[in-house]
Image 1 (cartoon, rainbow, N blue to C red):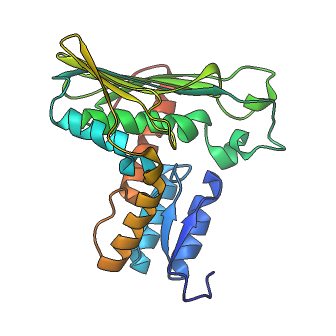
Image 2 (image 1 turned 90 degrees about the vertical axis):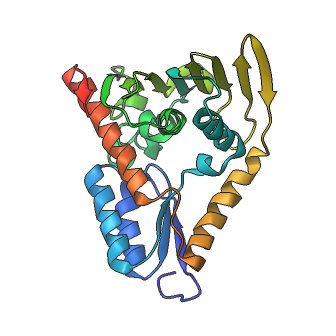
Length: 276
């Protein structure tokens, strides 16, 4: 790939712990890079990837597909338009029960490859939802992690993470993610002074459902086909390369999210709210 001039861009879908090294190799070879989420294991690694992009003069995009998915795009528009009034709370839940496994057979339970576990993998969708639905960045974070003893699945990673975010407007977000809970859940709910928006499922590859409730009247919304999201994401990367336009989900967004995850883990480790 490095030696083939026909290849202008690569999509890095390796385990997270390998993202930085192979993204840097790709830029060194003169390729543009779309990197799967989460961007990297630390904010320092993210910064190195951004620096490599800038040094090479090549595009860096993070594979946040929900920014190209019709239901989530419509939800963003509704929140910007005040469809539920002043936002009070956002609730997200991304969970499932991981089958029997251990570090010898599943990279997702290896800390050096996956980081803390469910938050970076599945819960990142909930964190992103809280940010793009509120339209704000949090000013404080408070979190709790769980790691059951004597369970080979969680010898190195957390089983679940519970997070509360406080926003400048006074709104709060309650995020939960887990590899150890059933039934499976993937939802985002926004409650405002004038209504409620519910997405359940919220961020899958397909099957999304969305309901807007105002004045006691509920309306099911179907803004498009969720299956277009991946193609639209790839098309956006290609168009940005061709015409030099800005990337919608750049490395800076990936860095932002990893920095927030670091604050979440710090809060849990220190047992206190962290001011951002």
